[in-house]
Amino acid sequence: ERNGQLVFALHPHGAADVARSFAPGMSAGAQPGNAVLVSMDPVGTTDWMFVAALPREVALAPLARLRNTAFGGAAALVLLIVATGLFAARSVTTPLRELALAARDLATEGRHSPLPVRSRDEIGSLVEAFNGMAATLLRSREEIEHLHAAELERAQQLATVGELASGVAHEIRNPLTGVRGALELALRRLPAGESKR
Image (cartoon, rainbow, N blue to C red; front, side, top):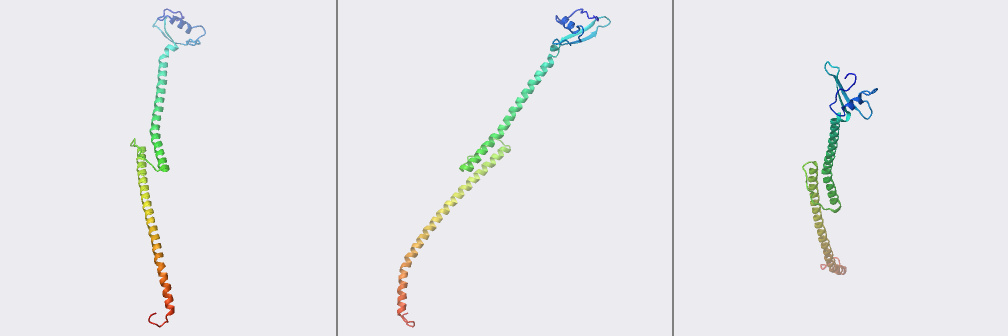
């Protein structure tokens, strides 16, 4: 009733909740540890008031579930973003690491086995370009080695011809020196105007 007397309650704890809500000196739901949400409305032309009292935990349970669902969804979204980021980072770093190792092998050991092209994006284009560059470098190196070997062979041939020419010249010079010496002696004995000279 309007004077605060409870007429009836539909819930066994309802009477206690309403009595607590209207305890002397307490406003509705202000009792510590027993927060209750109360709604009152007069019933027509009677002296009665309709009072609905719910413990705050019960009244706010849907909001708590919504909050927990939102936190769970946010955590799942963060995990999904982290997993996607890790996958994307790995899909970029793995080919770049392989490319760096292949470049180091090519520079230090002069060997290269073509890297697999796993994608058609910028990384795939970079791997294709590196494979082409490495193949060109290896072909150029082979050509240079072939030309160097040919030059070494030609130099050896020229050295052999030089040694042969030096030996032939020496062999020809020895008899000619003797002939020249004999001619000089013969020319000294013959007078300047003689036909034998």
